[in-house]
Length: 309
Image (cartoon, rainbow, N blue to C red):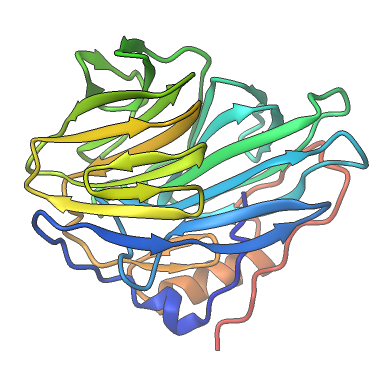
């Protein structure tokens, strides 16, 4: 989705971050309401922690009732320098992009759009849809060697799952519990969905070279010494080999991690760049050229880029 929670240019521009060893930092989400009552919790970027590995953006949308009206409608908008990673927790979203892809994303599936040098897309609720929508969407910053690559799109209908204690772990990115995700990324990363149907406890293995973050989508979780509920991302730093996760009820939890990203990035609106001059150029290209292509089939206007003063 387009970045719907506004930050100031200064907040977007300052995307340096500091990797910490064996630490726990609670990062409360910013919240906004999109369209007809869709609550969005923005967990990354955060003033206190801009990135976790190459993960530079994490929005949790819903759960929301989309049975009435048009549901979600996000008009065509551009991206550069990143991959958008959409994990459908519940419901459906219809993706269209300037490469000509039209793909319905449903529960338990991933859409991965690689923006590279530039792409545009739209997202909307289909006419025939489930009454509830819940989505976790991430952006992954592309390293300098890949950020001008040709744009691409991949749909992953099936991801590896493993049952650990009373939890079902879906490996979204990378490797965990002996399972390897097919999702193609360009930095050392891991991502997992941990879903429980009742109270349980499990030990999650970690790579001490990675920094990690963990968030609850629904339910609750005890992570080490910290009690978590929806609306907070717990930054775990690096240097850990495992973490204890327990729930007292049916819950859904997201774990993300990766090798600390060595490059400083500038994140503004829907662009992941290296300077504000690059951002200004992308805004000009969006408004005054066909650099990002055209999204066919969306019956609404494109989104204008906010001014960068």
